[in-house]
Amino acid sequence: MKKSLLTILFLLFFCIPSTSNASYDSAESGLDYVTRLPHTQFLPSNGSTQDTDIGISITFDSPISAISDGPNLDHNTQYADLSNNYALSVAGVLVTFKNNTNNLMVLKLGQSNISLGSLSAIPFVDGMKYKDAGNPSATPDVILPPQKSIRKTIYADYYHLDDTDWMVDGVPVLKDNSLYATLYLKVESSDGGSQFITVQTPNIGIPQNTATTKSHYDASSYPNGFYKYSK
Image (cartoon, rainbow, N blue to C red; front, side, top):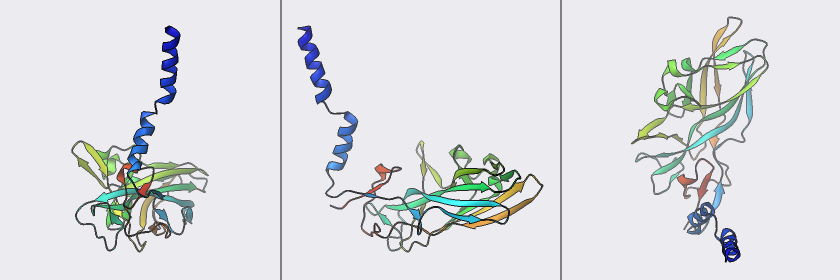
């Protein structure tokens, strides 16, 4: 009897599918057509570098994709869809700062600015509390040791509180790929120097072979990618 019971349990273990896999499959089974849609990117490609006259190189690794919603989306100019209420958007940029000098450099983000489309804000970085977005005194500095590189995600402080959850919004990506970000950064050096530098990202869009005016962006797949499907 004991041996039979063990045999049944063994068979059940291998025959019953994983709950997580089952739910994932059923979520996609109702779609007539499913394909992976890449995130937004800098055009023509991610990874371009700009040198500044103070010895800091800035590499634009990638935009940070998000989803915007609201009644004021312009479907003629923006990648807007999903029941006419959502748009593929950008919430910030992932950048790498390289200090090419022998001095210690400090990025004073609380005294800096990021401009993204019509939005202009004090940078928001990972590790901050959402309630501190836009607060200069709560915005940390970025320390760049000599001859070292640091990668940072810099967001525009574009957040809102939905009931008890903080929602990350973004600036809708434009169909003509004309959206870009500008960083106005205050930099201090260990040699006593202090100045502002201005850098502009390449234009932001999505690859032309995936651009479509009638795609359906599934917010449930964020942040691992967007799905488009048609019925």
